[in-house]
Image (cartoon, rainbow, N blue to C red; front, side, top):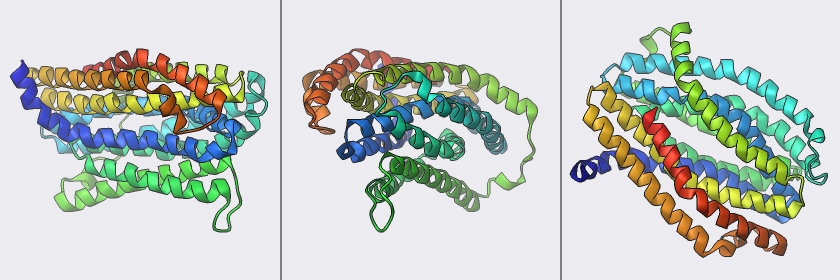
Length: 379
């Protein structure tokens, strides 16, 4: 078993490292947003944090529905059926469009109801315009998820890493321009961070679409020759596989959103501390989530080539990697909580509350990593 795991490590890491970097790049956008609005005060930090998690609790349902692409595309790729890989790409695009319409309506309905949530009155006026703008990024975000899962299921992960790393640069620059009113633009504060998020998500989707087109020009694999009509039985299969995963992830994110909404009823400092601690927990979670994606791909490819032993070894290798990392992250949280919170703010109340929250986050690190990796491998 150990020798088999050692053999699996290299191909697993070849997929996992770029995907983990991409996941970290995804989280880095939220971290950068929090840092860059930090000088505006705890109210701005709380508004960005509250708006981000509330939007994501809606968007994650649509992204979860697309998780079935990991399984279906990787199994088709393992079986050598590139035509089926392309077919699933088109169906993922259609599902993104069909899902974006009701989710966008739901998001805007939630924004209109914010005043009834008994949130901190200093935070709501900043959170509402932030949410109005960031909701515009929903469809590009779902397109990005579709393109990404198609590429990574075929072990083509470098464009994903490139897209997210450069998108972070785009996000930081637009944040600087629009939050503080540089280069002749108005100072939009927290709303400027929302526009930066929209721009970066459009960029990510555009880069991955370009990567797919360029890959097809180079390899001539028949992407433009498969049936591009809506395949309702295929969509049902995709939804049947993605819906349980979507519900699981939505419930998980929903718990964090509920906690953020409850924190929003407290002081601005408490909400800011909660947002900073959650940024750290989300950042560490991206590593086992990336490993889960690579594990899902490796297991799916083994299933596609009818190699049950390979699927078993791939799954256990992913689990060992994910749990090992999260154990190390928990130790860091326990060792230096105040130092970590201090990177975001010097506010004494935020430092005190944030440090205690990081100790709580340390407790659930290994369990969070374990469930992420195992659900990816099982799916």
